Image 1 (cartoon, one colour):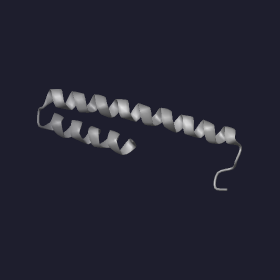
Image 2 (cartoon, rainbow, N blue to C red):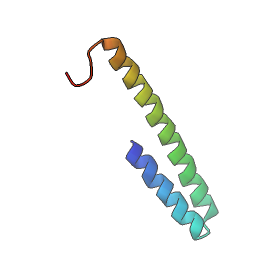
Image 3 (cartoon, one colour):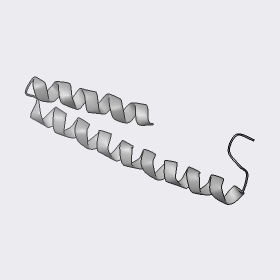
Image 4 (spheres, rainbow, N blue to C red):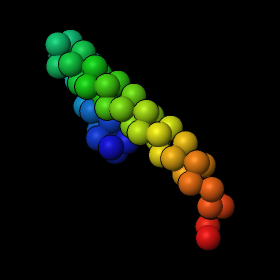
Length: 58
């Protein structure tokens, strides 16, 4: 999911360089949404792993 956020970020940067403001804004917004979803899922995963009680790597 982080990969998709980075892809949309690159598309937004390239579109901004070439002057496509609407496309750049839309791609940046999508990248931001996907990134925050990734962060939320990461935190949920870390909390669930900590509550499980197993040490990492075992």
